[in-house]
Image (cartoon, rainbow, N blue to C red):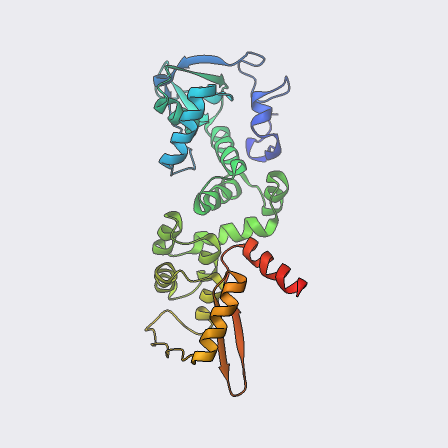
Amino acid sequence: MAEDPGKRPLGRGLSALLGGAAAEPRVEEGRPPRSVPIDSLHPSRFQPRRRFPEDALQALADSIRENGILQPLLVRRHPDQPGAWEIVAGERRWRAAQQARLHDIPVVVRELEDRAALEIALVENVQRQDLTPLEEAEGYRRLIEEFGHTQDALARQLGKSRSHIANMLRLLKLPDGVRRMLDEGQLSAGHARALIGLPNAEALARRAAAEDLSVRAIERLAAGGGGGQRRAAAPRRTDADTAQLERDLSERLGLKVAIAHGAGGGTLTIHYKTLEQLDGVIDKLSRS
């Protein structure tokens, strides 16, 4: 009895389809890649990727002009157009090859049912780790709902942690407005996760993007019911001596320093943007 394509181990991935004698499925098994006219190829209906950034495509096109296409595309016969091919894996290479003005492109042909073509397209994309967070989350959702994979199984077979799979799936619960901001790069996945389940998620998302808030700042606002009408912050009063001390410390550390002092004590805040800057502060403090 044929094996259920929804239960095949994902870890076999494209290497199994492009490789040895035990690869599935069996059509054209053992044949080398073949060249086909680039205009005979068509994108897959099952492609999970929605965005193809122009700068990345251009970089790949430049590489293809210099080195050619190093990995053939995986295709199947087009179900509706005789003599044409449907791309199962490799649409980004096909788009870049068009920009590089190639006339022919190397492909490996496999006979695949719709279900198998969809699963391979999903797995190929999530393994490449260059999907947007929502594209990745949608890929996981479809692998679970349409192919019966569990979160644990996906984590093992894709080399991810189970918590990563679960956290990405939670992004699908975001309101449409927040999802658009995440897809457009206005919010990170960390920012978006902090907004899940909040009634004022869209207002907080817009504020986070406008004010470049950190994830922790969003979490504090969410805990305090923020996101509605913003109260004007009281201006920070700094005396001349404190201001001079801030400048001295900023010059020594090369980072912005803020001192807040009151009757009961105060705080010293050192602002950094990268982990390298933080490492530098720690190193200086350790040697003091």
